[in-house]
Picture 1: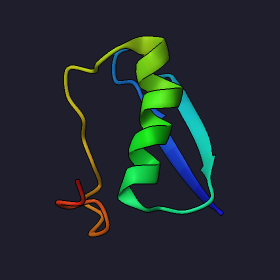
Picture 2: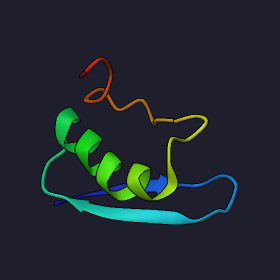
Picture 3: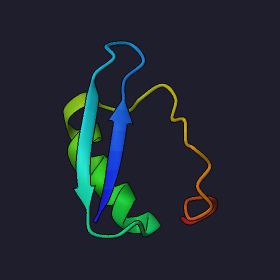
Length: 57
């Protein structure tokens, strides 16, 4: 089990999502379902440069 976190620099709010895997497509779907659908498109996305996410889509 993995934990995916979305942090807002504006509101300092955090959204934590339990993930069964860390494949790029799965994480993208979770982002869309849990963040984008509720808050819209962010102005910027900052990653920790995990090698599993670089150029995955």
